[in-house]
Length: 295
Figure 1 (spheres, helix red, strand yellow):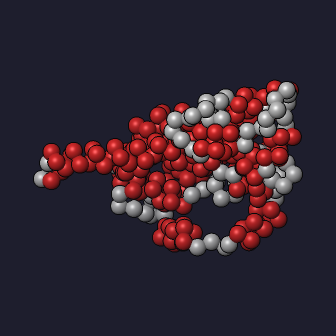
Figure 2 (figure 1 turned 90 degrees about the vertical axis):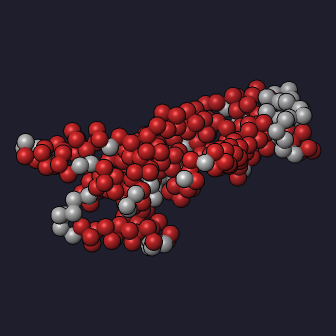
Figure 3 (figure 1 turned 180 degrees about the vertical axis):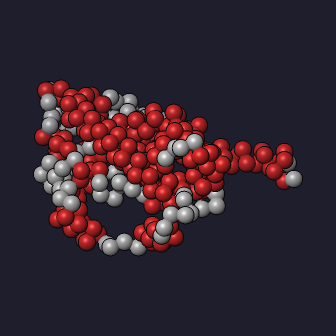
């Protein structure tokens, strides 16, 4: 077969290696730029090998570490709470849909899929969240809108429950007197760790990287900003950083670095995801592959 051919395996190895490099090179360039002097970036542009190494961006960020740490903590809270609630809702919804005998199963599944294709538009959605659910200027405004449930993830998890969990296991549990909640907690969840970990990772990334909720729903409560909103604030208004200048830069005749600070903030923002991914990697491929088959 072609898949066992030596030439095919070598070609795929080369292709995958090139694909990996296209993902790694931008991050290396970002890291390199964060350690490049501001004047060199303006004059020479971006480079994988800094012509003039400087720690000024990180030195300045260290001088305002209080704001960064606070934004980090808010992002951790938002990501932790939001991901936990999202996974619970997704799991309960998917488990119910995995029962074909559920009354209205097809209708519910249709509306779930329909929501992936059409929505009410931004204005109506915004009015519902602000006027009815009243999430404006609250922690709920960073958790509930747009992120609390993902229809695609429900379908993936439902498919996993349907195709991976043997019916005989659930039937034997029912014969022993177990209810649906007991079956879910004691049987389904332990057997579904790959897909649960996969969905948790995807949702954690979505929550961590989200900044639009802060822009839309936090009008006065900037103290609830996460690290991404803090980064957006820096990108859109460098004067904010200048207003936070401390004695760490007193005596310097140069201005606060602009471009290199953006690069350094991006590095700081991505570190938690880089640290978390290895713990989920062993579940990720298995969960997303099995959950996508026969959807």
